[in-house]
Image (cartoon, rainbow, N blue to C red; front, top):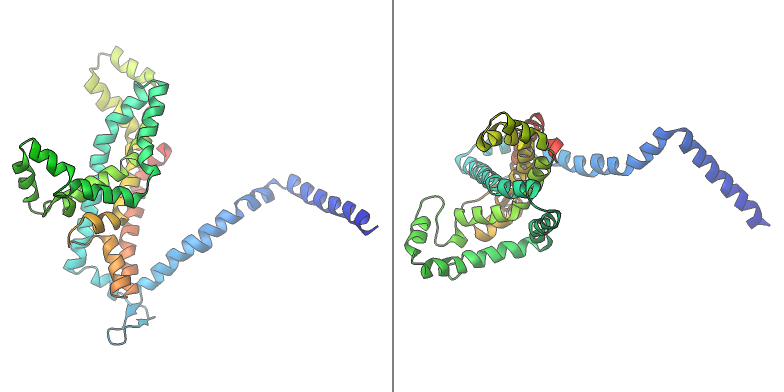
Length: 313
């Protein structure tokens, strides 16, 4: 008897809930986005706020304990030559990787968007995305073996009789080192390989949106292919380049694995943060150093937004 009476009550409750949601579509929308909003506000933005707050604390030099008092000591420490060189080195590498990825990605993306058949485009998509299916660390260590003195690059240079050229490159200040596997140039090569897919796809998506009629109109007006590229294709696809640069620049800016595996004693921001909070135990200074790439990316995203990059994502 209890079961028979509870069933209509349950149906009546569900009916009232369904009616309330149907007559109040805004309530259904709120319920749908409530969990993601709570995650963004409480977990993501909350953790960033905690990071910002900790960056204004300081480490007591005598006791090694964190003093929870407002101070700009950590940000002043970032202005020291050692920390400034870390920031400049990281930003320079991120910019160089972004430019090279754009130069390599554009021809491939253009071929995929304009000339590749549907079947060929599918295979090219697979070729671009396939490296992302393997472990990031495995790929980085594979490049360490490839670029080592005993690796295939040195072997090929020796077989072709251009070992002198490789030695000359390794002797170059800043980019050189004992071998490609322990040098700025080796890091640069690994970074470009790892992040290249993130540049190809946004550019290809932007090129797909360029109407063919624009290219035909440019040709009908007597423009040569070079002029069409400079005045039509590049301006219309440039938001895709900027969109891809958001990925390549930000990922290079915060990476610490490639510099750790292929780098030398010159620190990058990610390594500095790891050392400050791990080896030195200076969490406030690590938090302040983390704020640097965050600030750079906020400014970068504001500039990318003005260039229409988000429309190509």
